[in-house]
Length: 281
Image 1 (tube, helix red, strand yellow):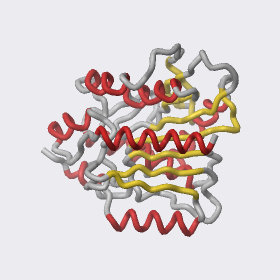
Image 2 (cartoon, one colour):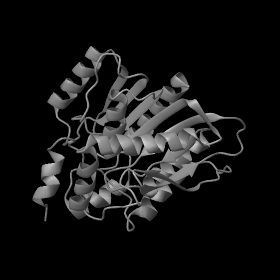
Image 3 (cartoon, one colour):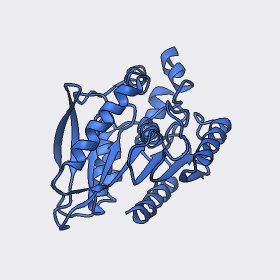
């Protein structure tokens, strides 16, 4: 049964209904994502840091076959919490030569098993933006302090809730060279002001996403244009919400959500992110 809390959150501030690699979906999603990662030595593992005395359980991926300092990329998870999917994306970024930190925005590695719980977790963080900023800053400083990271070259990507998060942080003036949002919400707690967005921004959106309205898109573009932001907004035809994760298909059935994996949009948006990073770094 679709709960009132679930749909209230979807049509509220962030309009985000994200997929997850829950335990029962992890094998399917992992196999699809890992296929894109070449077999290179990537010493990855748990990477904990603190924010307001709360332990944040992240995951760091570094490709040790590449010498010298590298750009650092923050990977912000879906509304379900820090999960295997964000870790897989971090591994893919490490394979490309970046140091990637899959962050924990909820603390203590909390993950949600149901949309009601996920909505509560996400609302607790983005609904209190000072909390969100403190947790993002903690991850940012943890990444910058890593010995393999060039602290002058930092980017961030996010999925669904994470997409809303990285866009909001860019709008807040954080010194990020490049930001990519994949099927993220566009009704943000912070919209850009003139000169606030310091780096390049990519927004990869599903043209058929039921949680993103034409008005939201228009308002977002108007705000970004007025702020003088350097951004690219792409609508992928035929793509629904959560188009980058194959787990979306089973979750759509399980929870009755209009979401689906779209291989073409997933691949094309990742290639656009590569172009964004090559230009920024």
